[in-house]
Length: 318
Image 1 (spheres, rainbow, N blue to C red):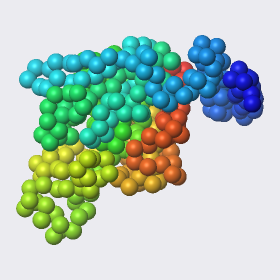
Image 2: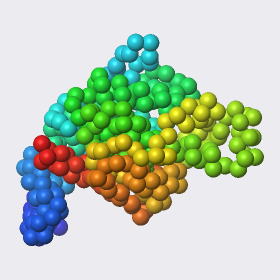
Image 3: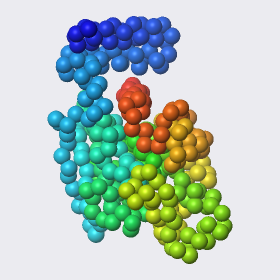
Image 4: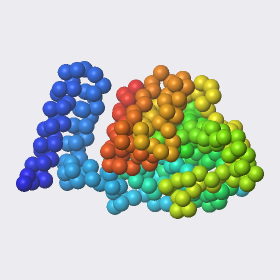
């Protein structure tokens, strides 16, 4: 059995070979491979081995975990957040509906940003996680205001926003409202307009039945009750924030990652977003076996590599 040191050397040699081969193609892959080689060398020398560093990244290195802070807002619920100071562009993570800032993707991103020395911020929306407020009283507009507050008051300089599910919808709304604070976007299972379009796609009889009850129940595997409940006021308010009926005035780089086996939000929504944003720099990445939460190790690796490439692109442009 090879020793950890020998395994690290083999990995480093493999990355070096990849870099040499990619450089011959003179494409973007060369830059990615060479960057991986440099960072691989740094990780091996500073963190006790490449394999050890990779596992810490995917698991979230809790030894240096940021502390929870609370942001006060006049006449609005306090928002819980965790922040790592560092270089620009920073990264802001927007979780999905009913989720919070302590998920696997959010924690892996913190360790990744910390390892590169870039700033990172994650937070809980009103009514979510450790933030004040009641989930059932929240709206898309409420959570959009949360994101804008974070960009305006807690984040410094342009940010790469990473939005998961409804966080992907909020990411688009925030980028439209704050173009100067938006360096790039990474959507994970982006759910733009999804609740509105899903309800409107129901039969007339089904919609009338829910409207009479005053509540729409949606089966889900992600809630202890087995359903998400949305009142009619929530849906009517959400209609004011739909973005897919017209061109989306976003011109920064956009990356959209979606799983073909997503049973909650169909992958074609990411395709619709890609078709409607005005940016000339848009990529859609479809994972054949990817599911909605995209929390498998390979999913998280892809997310991290995508953000890494964007950081390199943005810092090179500067």
